[in-house]
Image (cartoon, rainbow, N blue to C red; front, top):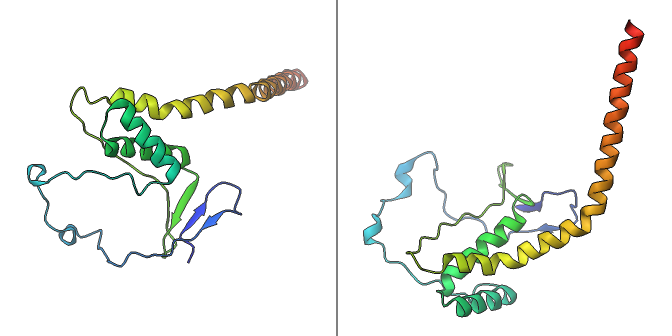
Length: 168
């Protein structure tokens, strides 16, 4: 069963999720969620970067070494940024026919002076560079389209004035 499909016009790319959720959860019944645990009894675990694709792992490990930050914190931020890059491009199709846009949400709480800004700057640098290159590459097409829109608006204004004169 195909549970994931690309949401843009290109339907040639489709991924198949082979595993299904084995546990049925009654989301309308909070009693099935289990007992809530207070934060002070939870023990945080370190996140290993071995699960990441090699190119992401290498980048995360390099940023962690450069910023002297915990690799797990860098991995969480990297996944957040990667998720933002693909968000709204894919949707998950449930067996019931319901679909949801693929999203990944993270909350990273670190104490002051944990190098959060340096981490974000290092991880966002390639995205910002790509956005700037794309803006430069697309500038002529955008300007041409803006000119086209201005011409069409002027034509609409002229036709509106002409229609007003005909009615008089």
